[in-house]
Length: 242
Ligand code: ADP
Image (cartoon, rainbow, N blue to C red; front, top):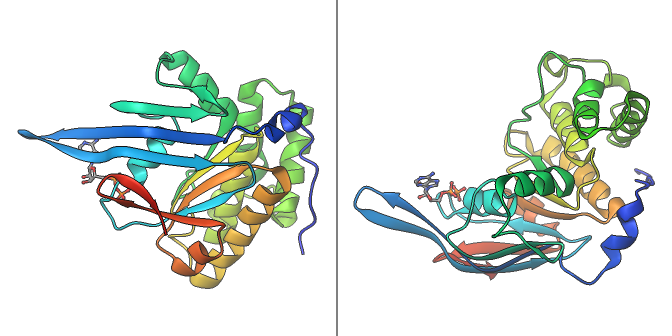
């Protein structure tokens, strides 16, 4: 069993406030395709609270990536409002959105996107150092997170020297390195065999639980979706609980 670790952070108290970590209110998103608009989101509503892990399950093309990009402030919506920790984001400028994204959100993708020329430890240290943490503290936290991910023996390996499951666990450690409030994951286990997928999900779940994060995880794996707190899908541009 993994033991809980103290992700000692002064904002922990702030996480106890009642506001959902993520709230979507009547969110709209459309893309122009040739001479017509493709309405991907048509008034999507969603609330996710600290400690909740939500599975996003929908067929290809339904709008999962669009939803994750909007929630992650990587794209602007065409209507409605996205609140992070109760703060409305639609009127923010690019710099404010980038700052909030760096502080509050960790991303995990289907392919790990680790930097190939850096070790596991360095990959987890880098976002912290970019944020301004000293090298010593960044090493300490990276070691702690990688140990939590059961990667003690792999800290000084390059991504190419690790298995797919190990690479994804490093990517998860990196995503939470800056103590975000929200994890957004797009098919994080989609590239792994079923046993490894469950192992990686176990690690992600333990981390989310121990640190009071909120997570939205897009997946096609129904066994893994069944292990989350809630399951949502997209139907005609709206979010529906399953
Ligand atoms: P999913 O992640 O569920 O597969 P996406 O969010 O990637 O779905 O896409 C939803 C729909 O929006 C698809 O029909 C896709 O082709 C379209 N789409 C996504 N991004 C763009 C874009 N930048 N320009 C035009 N159409 C897009």
